[in-house]
Image (cartoon, helix red, strand yellow):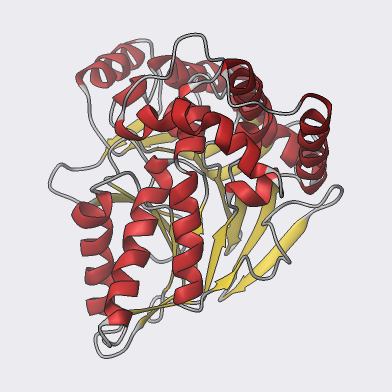
Length: 387
């Protein structure tokens, strides 16, 4: 059986391909599309190559297209992909891909019916973020929170395109892709693959919506600096933490934890509520590091409780990611145990860190994507991906 995670060259973002199933008839899931330019440079040529190899005379089936996180460095390439398909549809061409379902929790879904008030207060403030600019001084909003708000129009366009292409949305969930308040939600994908949704948590989303409505009723939300500050603080404290879809993928007795940009403490809460962290430690075959290896999302204790044989990091140094301090956390948590770290981009500072680690007697391996390759892949199944 094939069970392979392929991490594309996605600059400072994420664009992942999950391959699974029988070697002669492998299946495909696309998770995120990276920031601007990644669809054209990496995702589109890789999908074209897969189609040519697997389904040259008919549309290639994509079992799922997932937007894990509301940020340009995840959603931009997905939107470009869907725009491409909508254009082909408008020209009467046969679509090269048959997408079975789209998983995408929009900003409107998370905040609820009152999302417009928050956006009205923040729209002018977060506009510079979409072009790499800075947020206004004095606004209590992180870059990550601002990026979510700035990407809202992209999320709505993704929804509109999905409707145009008649894609099923968030199947088999009724609305949001979310973990139940108690217990766990496991979705059988088929061909030996299943997903357990770890986050966001349904109860927490409902609480967030109630809290936001109460803020509006009590204080209103004027389009001034005070209103902007109120919306910004709420976005960072609540919406940002709930914006990533977190799934545990299982096939052939192997496991991958795909975390989007979730915060480590939210991942741990999700694992505990689903009963996957009963003994205090969960060992995985593969962990996709949250938020491109940022040290603002994890602590050393996270890596003590969630261990893996393979760690995958998608980043290129922008915003300091992956942080050397995050890699040090993994090293400290694992001691002299053997594991492998995979990185989509090589940097001098990373080489220096890993060289120093080796001198300390560390036994883990490091694999960088080759410069002439579109991606790197981690094969967990009995059979390796060949196309």
